[in-house]
Image (cartoon, rainbow, N blue to C red; front, side, top):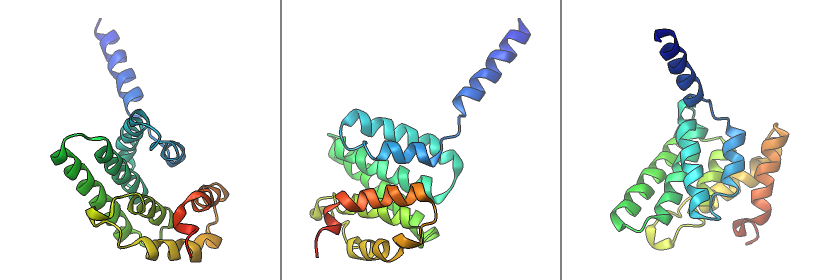
Length: 159
């Protein structure tokens, strides 16, 4: 009986500590704004991704918190989620200011946030940074992902 409980404990630890890869998070990010359910799944995924303790995972989790704010009905929760998300994204960029993917995350959140919230001051900076640095992205998959965002974002269609 003791052996059975030890095996069960090991199995539970192994299945609950699955390391989330950034590719899985990227794929989910592309669809997270389509519904509240997708946003919640993205939130849970990025929460697990925080185990990696890298800036990119913090940036995506910040975006997930901002999306959670968009779907919250309680105004206090809405502001709390949004402020935590904004802080997480900005701190990730402070730690890795040359990370084009983090700039894309912030740009996507700022360009879709109501102006009244006041989180829009880096839109031009991030757009210009991305335009200047997209050619230097060495990962083919990441480059396609970012170019895909740039092709449909209204930020890049404005002069």
